[in-house]
Amino acid sequence: MSDQNFIIEEFHFYKVFLYGRNIEGVKTDYGIQLNIPSGKVVMRFSRDYEEPNRYEEKNGKYTFYVYLRADKYMAHIDLLRYEKPLFFYYNLDSNQTYITTSDEPVGEEESSDD
Image (cartoon, rainbow, N blue to C red):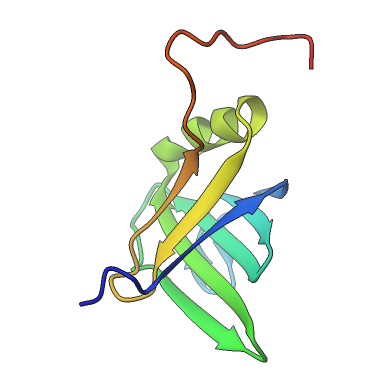
């Protein structure tokens, strides 16, 4: 497995979804969609189970499907609301994924002046 087969891209926009319970055959409670330069990320949060992450590539654009437990939803919302810049990482070999900030100085306080 190559550690070089991944993408990491900064994103600036996201969309939040609240579902009934069954969307496209998947039991989903919450969803977040990220718009990234190479395509989009569809994050699905469920209290019942997690499916394996996967991705599709079509016409040079990616769609990443990321499945998480519902108890992780609020942590993701807080990160999206209060941190910047943010980056989406996806390992194309292992399907591991995360959202990360950039390096920040120790002791940096959050500002409400933004």
